[in-house]
Length: 271
Image 1 (tube, rainbow, N blue to C red):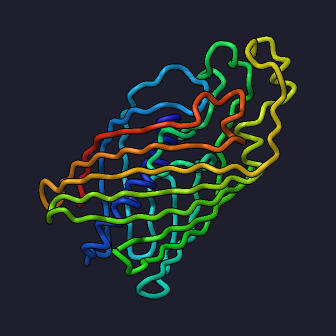
Image 2: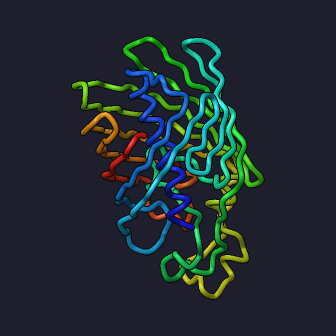
Image 3: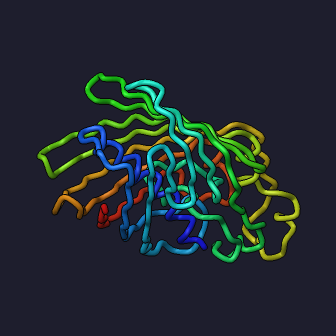
């Protein structure tokens, strides 16, 4: 289940990077279907066991305005040549800080994954989310702005991204991306707060006090995608990202690192 949820978040960024390719070259097909595989490695936000290499398959399908990307289902509406609105539902949402994915809460948190001294915390579960996304092509140096809001029973979040594709050759693309995310108080309390019950659990020998941030929290990230088209259908790509969280998240006793990284290498085949 953890790897399935990890696919969701990484896939959403892969596709946003892929959109940069489509800015350069529009597809005439009404159907878009792709399969891929990625191996990734990164540090962890929470105090979980040691880092490990993740092997992640992914699949996407689009038909005109309707799409399925991992476990995100959505409908796109092109308002004008610059502006596109998307309504979507994420079946396994929750912590949506990451741009490329993996470094910040890319899976639901199970107490059994925590380090010794923290394994008595409550598991942090995912949530079904509804959201709205706006894509705007600025026509300035081919910069694309993306803003979104989403939420569910455990809280909501928003994210603003700036993407700028560079076509080095007709086969090589480099696409940097900057993200800024904001989580509401409910999200911060649920995913990063520590309750009195958790402090009193005998397994939590390293938890000494309640943590109740009850504030909004922010996170920022900078990353890049490098893709190379081996053929018209087959591509190899690399994703890299560094992320940073603010005090409301970083001060949580179940959080290890304020700054995290993620790197990966993958292949994709477009049908």
